[in-house]
Length: 242
Image (cartoon, rainbow, N blue to C red):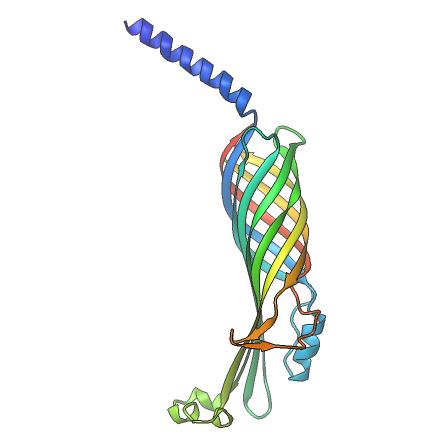
């Protein structure tokens, strides 16, 4: 009886392994953090900030952070689907001679789905061609505060008219719908650990700009948008069957 059980168990394992390699010759399901680089064109935004005396934002790009997950689609060789989210922000401040501190914070966050074809270069090295379809929001926060507010006096910000206030804040935002063609390369460090580098270019269509999500703002310079070169380094932990 025991021999029969061992025989049936062994035969089941053999058949399972054979059928699995036939149906899933290559399969991955994994995810992890992303460290990225985004090079948006900020020339027009910096020109606007210069008008109010705020130093320009970086023209060399922004550090972006996020995360990603993906799965290889069974029965369709090379097709990989996934989801991701990533964003960045940068802040600049200046103090004017009349004790007014002016600050701008430029930020962008997006989430999207990834569609890729993945092929093998070697046992540990692969390449990918695909893209990301995303939706996000671009923000420009501008703040102005009097240094008088460093000393507690509730009446300084409690006046009935806006002109009596020693501080003000404005948030401009626009919805962003993007498509990002990209190519990538991945390397299998360990059986459960993969790293991949994707490089792409984001092309976007933006909604109207709004102030504090209430007032529609017209005549915003058209060059203030999230288009630009992107690079993403992903660290992926999961199941990888080669």
